[in-house]
Amino acid sequence: MTTDKPWLAQYPKNVPKTINPDQYESLIDLYEECFDRFRMHPMTICMGVTHTYGDVDKASLAVAAWLQAQGIPKGSVVALMMPNVPQYLPTMIGILRAGYVCTPINPLYTGRELRHQLNDSGAQVIFVVDNFAQALEQVIEETDIKRIVLSKMGDMMGLKGILVNTVIRQVKRLVPKYNLNDPKYHVTKFPDVLKKGKSLPFQAPKTALQHKAILQYTGGTTGLSKGAVLTQRNVVAAAMQSEAWYRPVTSDINEVYINMVMALPLYHIFAFMLSLLGMRSGYTFILVPNPRDMPGFIKTLSKQPFHIFPAVNTLFKGLLDQPNFKDLDFSSLRISQAGGMAATEQTAARWLEVTGCPMVEGWGMTEGVAAGTANVITDRKFNGTIGIPVPSVDIIVVDDNGETVGYNQAGEMCIKGPNITSGYFNKDSTNDFTKEGYFRTGDIISMDEKGYITLLDRKKDMILVSGFNVFPNEIESVMLDCKGIIECAVIGVPDEHQGEAVKIYIVPADNNVTKEDIKEFAIDNLTGYKCPRHIEFVSELPKSNVGKILRQKLREKHMSDNPQTL
Image (cartoon, rainbow, N blue to C red; front, side, top):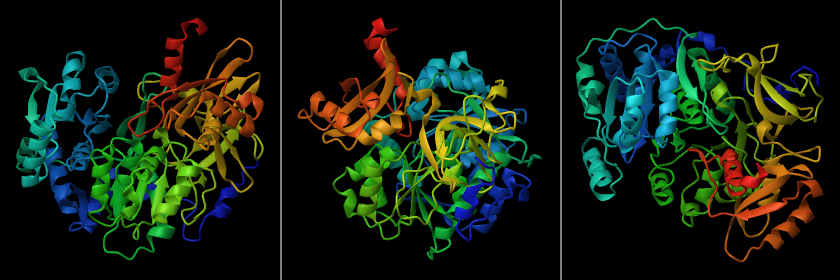
């Protein structure tokens, strides 16, 4: 493969080839620019309650002043464990404005997962919504947490919030009992942080682009999660890259306010990056605290127009499977951004048919602040690729020896750009980079002559059958066309004859679908060595917080069910 960056020729006219994050002195500069420019604009809407950019500015300054008053050394790590509620962004921005590093935590974590992240990051302070305080109680004795800020879901919703909190606690009983009353933990209620913080002095710290901003832990699909160190420069760059990419469409939206659906959790890197992209452009975020409640989600979408809809394939599909989703007004929808996992042609076709807006697939990773590759935003046809590198991103494809492969040849994707991490927290990251400084993604891809990239699979998920490489994504995509299959996932399992064999886990539509039907379909549509040797029906597939299927969990299940194969 040549290094002439063939993808640049595919860029629309108004998309720049490069971006310059160094136009800002710090991430804080960017945030303050947004607050000044869009002060009166609505920034978030949640359960019918609106907060302007000015509101979020004031609340984040109060959080920052309160944190500084606690005497925590500059550069310390502060944990944030909340769903998509109005207090999330003021808290996160407040942590950064105060001169600290934020580590976002998935609120659905078990005690074990939470303990690992708190200890690995060294966090001493945590902001947590009380729905999830029980998990914290289980492990807090084994962590360095000295201060806890407890929040309720409705804390920034005024009178509406009282109702929300009552329903959550008394009616739905969604707050498990917990006890964090020990005085050594210095528990403060979130409204008190805002109240006290408003009257406390705030000293703007001297920060720069090279300073750490976010300690973002990877999904942990292969064991203990690792903290990717994301600098202010990484974060600013990713937001600018994505904004530049969206420009051909967003520049043509002539409405006063552009609404972005924020159903992806803000603690996930994809949503975090989108929040920054949106702020630079003055967007309004429609916050969805619980997207798993599909009827409630659809009701939220019916309340106001929505222009940009980022989601993962499972979320798009879940909405399409709701009978009343098609009745929504899609006339304002201009961008449907798929990411986080491979989008399927079936879901993309249905989405276009129902909404009239094509699903645009891209690829990103935690280590690159969710920016990497994307399909051209004005393309209306689903092409099954993850697109081309976005501005200022360079990608090479290498074999197992580190040699660059030719066009249309499979190899590992290695990436370089201003958005890419310098490594993992408290880990030796030398082996994560090539000698030329490209980050090894672990993804197997091929690139064509135009620079378009096809994602074949994760390196670690690749199955070796009798010396042939088999990619689970390919099989899953084919098998989803088989009648009676709602969802499926493929793994490799030990096989004494072939080294590994293909096993497929299937969520069937009903009891009518048989293993024989599936075998016949596979034989008709797949090369012999790719056909599943083992078929297992399950009621559901294990998924991450953003709907990504966790193949590692299925491998563990297989080993547990078949100890003789160990």
